[in-house]
Length: 120
Image 1 (cartoon, one colour):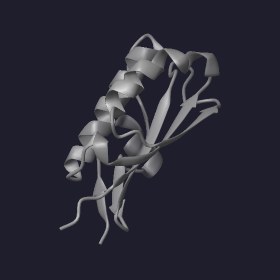
Image 2 (cartoon, helix red, strand yellow):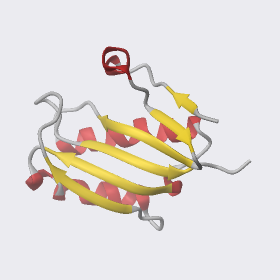
Image 3 (cartoon, rainbow, N blue to C red):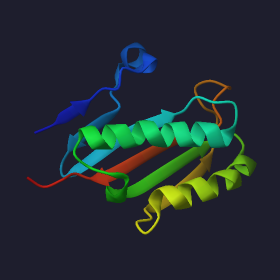
């Protein structure tokens, strides 16, 4: 069974994707950007959106096993470290950071996660 979770974001309909898909024992959360003026504001906002998608799937941030961070400027990653350490705490996932262009130059970070889906 596949469950699709939509957040109502503007790009979901334009591009044709959903915020998350629950399949094969995992929750795959699409790359998520956040609003705000700084990379840390956007990081916090993206994590809140991700948290909401995980909650809709019956999971929490503690269930995240893999995270990918995408930033147009790798030097902006370090200011996010305290936020990420606080968010994942005692349950740190495997992680990768990639420097790349994002869909709009106003975005400073995009975060994508994979989490374990709850068992019935």
